[in-house]
Amino acid sequence: MIFEQSLKKELSYTTGAVFLVLMTIMMTTLVIRILGFAATGSINPKDVVILIMLAVIGYIAVILSVSLFVATMMVLIRWHKDSEMVVWYSSGLNLRMLYGPVLRFATPWITIIAVMAIFVWPWTNAKTSEITQKFKGRDETAMLIPGQFFESMNSNRVFFIENIDITTNKIHNIFVADHKNARLTIAMAESGKINFLDNGIKQIQIENGKRYEGETSKSDFKILEFEGYTVDIEKKTPKPPSYSPKESTSLTLLENPNPVAMGEILWRIGLPLMAFGLVIIAVPLAYVNPRRGNYVNLIYAVFTYLIYSNLLNISQTLVSDGKQSFMQAFWPIHVFAFLIAFILVRHRINPAISWWKRQIPGGYKL
Image (cartoon, rainbow, N blue to C red; front, side):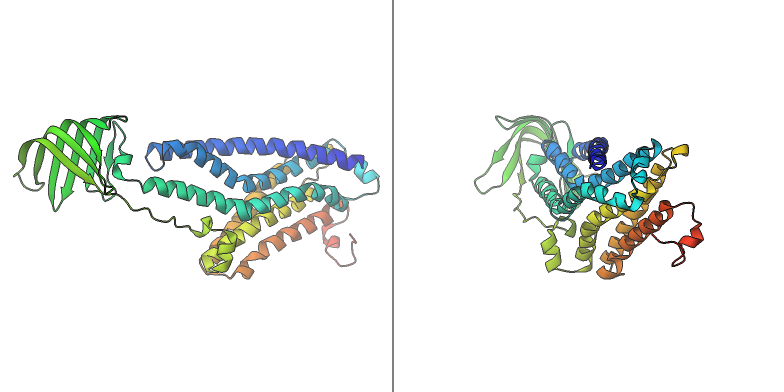
C-alpha cells in the first residue's frame, strides 16, 4: 500500500533525526559529567572515552523509546495538519486501523529496546563498574599526579610530587605528610625515586631532605636532616568485582528474587512495554483538526512521557523497598496506558458524538 510505505518512510527518517538529536544532547551531558569525575580523580582519564561509550550504549533503550514516541507524534500531527489523513479517512478507514502500519513499523524498534534493556543495560553497567573499581583499587604510587596533592585511601598520608620521570622513575620536589598515633611527620626533599621490590611492595625513596616530626597539639617538633628516607606502599590484593542489581544479568536477578532484584527486573521489562504503550497513545493523541493545525499536542506528549516514566520509576522503588510485590506494581501503569489509548481512540473516531454518549454501552459503537 502506497500510503503505508510513505508512512513508514517518513517515520523512519523522523525517528532517526529525533534519535540523533537526543543522542547528541545525551553525549554532551555525559561528556561533561564524566570529565568532571576524571578531573576529581574518581576515574582514570584514559578511560573517559570508554566510559562515555558504555554510558551511551546503556541509554540507547531509553533514547529509542522517546524517539519512537516523538517521531510518531510529529509525523501524524503533520499528516493531520496538512490534510494528508483525509486520504486515509476518505478510503473508508478510521483512526483505529492506523495502528496496523504504525505498529508494523514500531515492532522491530520495540524488540531492540527490549534486548537493550534486558541484556545490554546490565552489561554496560557491569563493565563500567569493573573499570571504576579497578582504578580505585590501584596502589598509591599509581595515583600520584605531578603537581597535585594526593590523600591516601586511609586519609593518614598526603603526597605531593612536582615532577615524575616515567623512564627512570625519578621524582623531584617531594612532600610527604604522615599522621600516625597522634604524631605528624613531614618529609621534604628535592629528589628521589620509586623502587619496586620483589615482594610486590613499592617504595618512595627521597634523598637529601628534611623531616619534621612531633605532636600537633604540642610544640616539641624535631627537625632532622637525612640522606635517605623511605615510605613503603603496600601492594593491594585485587578483589573480585562486586555487582549491584543494576549491574547483574537478568538471569542472575531471577535466580535471587529479592525485592531489589525484582524492582530492577520490573524496570527492564517495563521499558519496552512503556515504548509500546507510548506508541499506541501517540496515534490518537496526534489527532489535529486541519483547520486549527498546530503542534500543541507535542506538549501533551511531553507530559505523557514524563508521567509514564516517573510512574515506572515509582513502581520500581516500591518493589525494591518491599512495599509492593512485583505483580502488584507491574501491571497497573501499563493497563492504564492501554485504557487511555482506548478512550482517546473512541473519542477521536467521531468527535461529533457527545462524550457522555460514547461511555454508554450501545450508545456508540467503535
